[in-house]
Amino acid sequence: MPNIYNALVVKGRDTVGQPINVTCEVQQLLGNNRVRAVAMSDTDGLTRGMDVIDTGAPLSVPVGGATLRRIFNVLGEPVDNLGPIDTSTTFPIHRSAPSFI
Image 1 (tube, rainbow, N blue to C red):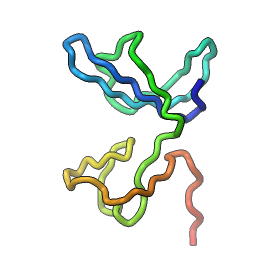
Image 2: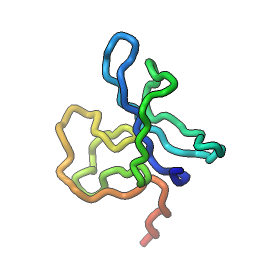
Image 3: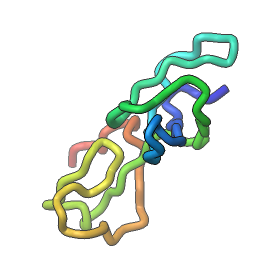
Image 4: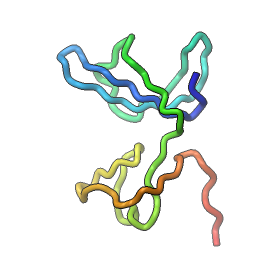
């Protein structure tokens, strides 16, 4: 069973053969190998029986100077059409805020 806040990835194909790749976050453990999760993107085409992969880690986003003046989605992917982010440093989205100096 995944931990609370772990990222899950649902992969498969919809009914017309288009690839599906949806990232979810575990919110509750229901028992009997079931969890309640929140999808971080569109869920059109998801069906019962699709493969779900536990990433073993929480959702993480890029951080640092390279992220300033950029626009990201909830998964930390840039959506501003300025290309990829030049940083390898990421932090989980559920962590304490940095202290105020």
